[in-house]
Length: 133
View 1: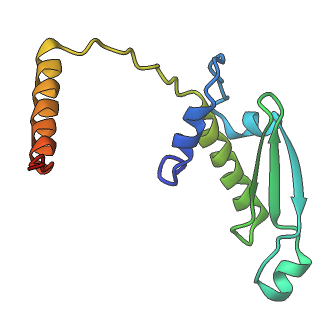
View 2: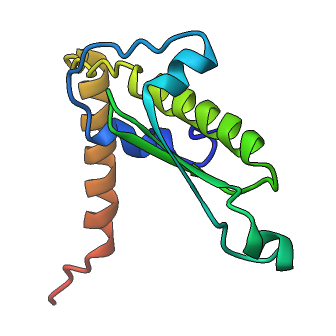
């Protein structure tokens, strides 16, 4: 999900060396590591959305990741969606970006660039009119 919206590209820029984050496989164990907060969702939905606390915010204590969901009318479904979001964010944080090693430019490429430059300079020299007589 985050790779599709460009989030992965942004995360690559502030790359720091961290230990790999391991999450429990079971949702109940992952939920036990989180601080749960339910609140009223904002937006359209009328009387139902104004009366029920169906929106969910989870704070994963070990990593400090905060996620929120208010997409569904059900608090349980929003909680499940928050757990999915935590797993997605942690999987993105676990990606190790290997820095690119600079390689030496081969002689053939240097020669090709030099030929292109001389050809371009010859074209520019032909444009000038030096007939001062």
